[in-house]
Image (cartoon, rainbow over all chains, first blue to last red; front, side, top):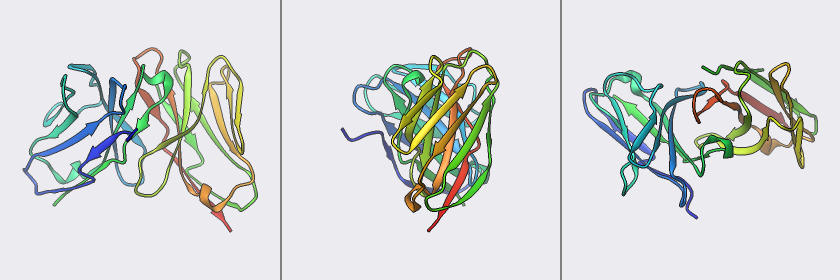
Length: 114
Length: 113
């Protein structure tokens, strides 16, 4: 079992470019969560998805950010027109039947906007 | 929504001593409380969890206690070792607002050899 796979591990983008972060959940897991972690800070919830559905996007900024989890393929977190304040570690987690059974986190994507 | 507070933010102990990290939560409907360990440059790893129908759970040197009345839960690490040095996060499932976990702000634990 390869665990939760995130790629790329590191991503550098210039201001105004687009960033695409990918997450493949653990085999058998149908729930995906995205969190953002700023340096020396905690994990802030962004969005919770199941296959082809966004369940809770209450933590997503209203503009420039979007997420999807298609029927086939990985979940994608997309950030358009990146700004320096988007620099952070973005973690994806998956679970089998929802949060009551805990998450398995990926190793994260560290986004740097220059 | 759920709010989780965690203390202390940093903790330094001598190897072999115990470490205690405390968290409080706001949503009385919360029913699941995991603890995660995050090492530098890595993703958080689940180390222990507790559900609201029990008051204490132990796994070797790690134990978690839950006081539902006071809405707080704690992580206890005994006989600390240098490899326990990491950032620890508590979390609570927001029972009234879906399946997401709300995390505390983290405790940076340093174990001095």
